[in-house]
Image (cartoon, rainbow, N blue to C red):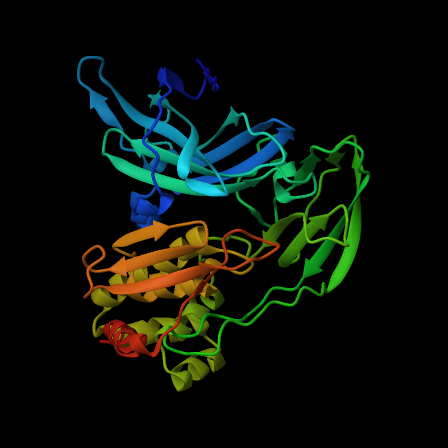
Length: 417
């Protein structure tokens, strides 16, 4: 039996079990709970590091503020209990689970702490195969389920899964974006590489077009704005800090696309903390002339407040609309960021205007959203195709259609009255 060990000072493992599951398609699992508002979501992040040719370490991170702590009346303390389960598929055959395990964890330490839990588990994955990992966390107290998928590539030693980023405290940085005050080191599996080349790309200001517009998504240029290098010593870099917004793509061989990428967005990303950051997403629900007028105002915060007050009709409703709208913007940043902020993406646009989808089904190549009864012909269905992108696995493009025009304008109008 496999055994997994975790830091005892954070968590108390109360049970462990392995299990086999009936083979099933990933696309049959409804993962809409992943995209609920942040107050109801664990906001799980996962990443993989190929430690050697036949083993991979899976890192996962979530905040305990999303857990429900229940009071034990006999012992008079609060505890959360959650189950972590993974299913592993060969990327060439997602109908069959090739490995699976689960274990239960009880946490009686982090009640009311809003603490980030960062932990890991090892899985036997052999080269040169490529895999898809499904990692599910179930809050057993409130029956909340979060399922995340991760592609793991073991076909060469240059791809993103052969690098891990650690902060000043040696904690793995599970997400792939950094803030201006974050210092970090790069660790890599290949010890015989002594230099990494970094291609820098300026941030893009392009945002998603409405879902009924045709013409396709603007393709990002792969021509870097600048290139520099960093030294590697015994598989580790010196402490680094990037303060300029943009995309940083790290490679040991610039003749190939393989490598890993870090994104530097606004300082408090994924949060929205400035008037300028509040202004830009209004492009989805404002007219062109309204947005141009707002952009020219010297008092940006006052202009935004007046915009919402005008649409809401009274201060109390304006405050509620602001809360809902910008919570969605922040959640879009958490869930859908790719080579640009999540609110600028196709999925982010739909999420902000329409809200969290009722049902979500994912396969290796696409993600389908339903608004309305699950798979009902009368429900609005949106298909997002996964885009091949050297920087990220989280880039999806909406399959646009003129049929969305009326429902789009109806949804926008609901924000304006």
